[in-house]
Length: 114
Length: 111
Image (cartoon, rainbow over all chains, first blue to last red):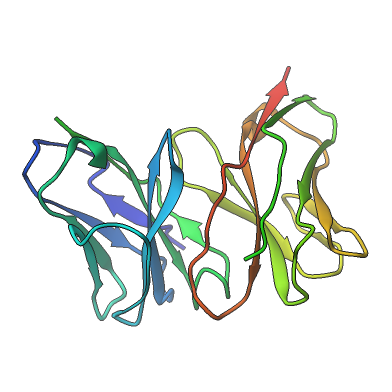
């Protein structure tokens, strides 16, 4: 079974631009969670989607948004990029949700904002 | 979710058992203990989880004390590839589907 796929693997953007990251979950998984990882803050929860509905959101500004499609694939968008948005963005899928079934992570998208 | 406390780091010799402790003294009766690990430059990897009974799978064993206030993840024969940050999380199933990771513990397996 294919794992969680995140694209692109690396991304360089300029302040003020916007970016869209993509996540393809494991087949059959309906829940997709997104995390931001930085050296200083560790893994920070962004949001979780299940069957196209956002069920939970972390403490991030409205510039961070996401969506999930009917095939469970998910995208997250960051608008008006700031230098502090430079981070590894990780997507994870699970059957029913991160607390109900194990999370399976992709290897992330490394975003650098200059 | 109950707060968990792990050492910042620990070392282990290759081939020996690695015993990774986790304290969760305020854990509730319906909260599971989950273990994940993150190898450098990769996404975290699920290892094992349990509620009361000890659990074992192909990767590790999880020993939970009778009072459930602490647990130990055991890697029976540590290899260099087990060098990673290990996260212990206490969380109830269902409810708010938001799994929060702490800072974890860096395990270094030495040759």
